[in-house]
Amino acid sequence: MILLLVMLTGSMISCDFFSKPQNGNLVITLYCQSIQDSLTERTISLEQWVIDNQVELASLIYIEGLGPEYYIGDENGRIIISDVPPGTYTVHPVFMSTEHDITVQVVDEKTTARTIIIPDILIQGYLVHTGFMDANFRKALSVGIKREDILTTLEWDYQPVYTALPTMFYQDGMYTNTGVVENAEAATTLFGATTAQNFTLKHNTSEAHASLASQIISQWGDYDAVGTITTSVTDWEIFTNEVYELHDYEVARFGWVFDSNNPLVFLRQIFDRTEYTSDAYSALVAEVEEIQSDMDAEAFLSYIDEFHTMILDEGLFIPIYEN
Image (tube, rainbow, N blue to C red):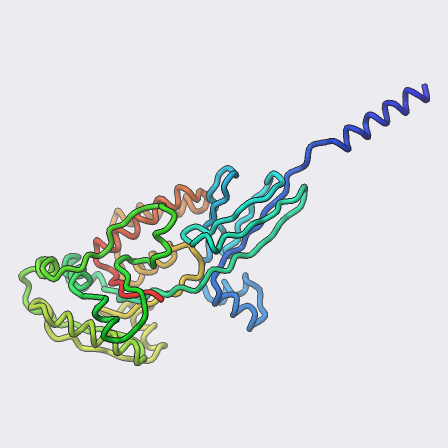
């Protein structure tokens, strides 16, 4: 009887010892370098920074070998993946070059937490309010300028952009977009046979913004449909109140540093600040909000190009350069 008990006990210990590993958890947080600098300088938490700045950092990553492979983060840029088999994984920030990939080791019954810091990237351009002329006229303002000439004249070593998003957002083959095609004849056609339109271009106090505005106004002056363009220059507080809060403008400078690798926040700002509305846009917003709440990253990514295409078709944003 004693021998039998020892044998059974030994068998039980042996089964426990050779039992299958239990899965672990993976937590990835992603945001840009300027946020990291701010957190260090102010010694505050990421959650508090998000509250203070009223932004949404929902980030996007790809992990080969997990199902699903695409993941979307919460408002703090944090992605929590449970029940991950132990092993080594490569985490790729979507839309970023592979140099920003990280390797993580998920351990049996443990939580592995890592942070990815992406470089700051800024896009500069102009908002065009929907109350100003029609979509064709607004598009003509973007089609009718030569970005390379502007940057060369100003001696700025920046990358011209022809889409509403910086170059990095067109990596990974997630979607394609034709962007803005510069063409003086096409711009003339889009402007139409309207009488010369006078309007105001607003920007905040800055020598660089003034130089850029001067170059663009000079190029628009080549078209009969464009009349006198008056510049309105104010300090940052007045500018943001008039343009971003009151939406009191026709054409206004708009720059954006991407807080995370999720471009939807920026695209939504363009719609909001130009006061664009349509049934198609409302339906699109409702659909993407449901997808985002379900954390369905693959479906979410498919909607980004629809927002972007709508912005270009409606002439809501004139992209100029990125740096």
